[in-house]
Amino acid sequence: MKSFINVQDIGPLDKAMAEAFEIKNDRFKYQHLGRNKTLMMIFFNNSLRTRLSTQKAAMNLGMNVIVLDVNAGAWKLETERGVIMDGDKSEHLLEAIPVMGCYCDLIGVRSFAGLTDREYDYAETVLQQFIKYSGRPVFAMETATVHPLQAFADLITIEEHKTVERPKVVLTWAPHCRALPQAVPNSFAQWMNAAPDVDLVITHPEGYELDPQFVGDARVEYDQKKAFEGADFIYAKNWSNPGVTNAADYGKITCEDRSWTVDTEHMSWTNNGKFMHCLPVRRNLIVTDDVIESPNSLVIPEAANREISCSVVIKRMLEAL
Image (tube, rainbow, N blue to C red):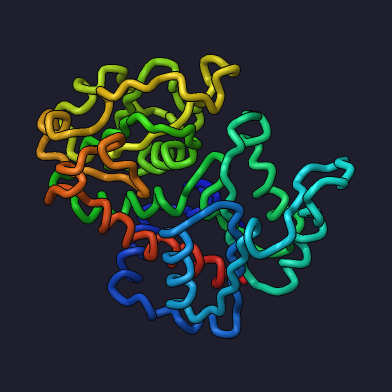
């Protein structure tokens, strides 16, 4: 596996899931694979779970780890071609990337959407430069449009906690005070569609339609209560307007309806449903205290599984070196 961005990159999903549970049972089984190998983790944005879980996974596999915070511990980087660099950016990615590749064996990149230029974001401009110029295998630690390590961990969590063979899983939009990327909902939809035993429903206000390449065959329901009925898992996440129905709205907050906040009444519509969220979460905006603190909240086991999903990805990349 030379790069990891989408669910297709992981290969047969049943094998990946089996490998995940094998590693969860013995996290150090493949420690020999990373001996004398180095992972470089590059962060263009803040992180808690991704930073900790990825570093832990790499260490479990015997790797050395270098962490670079681009905006805190390095020169400011220019990402555009043809720019006269007479501003505050001292180095260009086209030089920085191959230099980074000299010091490591694998690269993980975290870079968010700018939410101003949909074409630029959905082309994954920054990530693709790392794939093209680093000379190293590259995996996404969240990008402008996807967060596959999170979605893989979500699927592991659902598999562990499901009580029926084919659970109904609902991805629900929820309000937020800031414009957020579509990366998490995009990947969640993509991975749930790829899973053979998940019934996926996506619910959101009109105008918040995700890109069709990620929605796939999922049912879209604009009535949140109707979507929640009989659900086994509720995955709450805010995203800014994806600009699918109106390109001018891309990255904007075009709905602030607080009735979409997941509370006890919302969860009462479900089949004793489990609550999920990728974290960090704005309490009493995305979800109320009583729901996230309830016995049916899976946010902590879900976060813990980030170590497992990342372990599978890094293991496969090491095996391909």
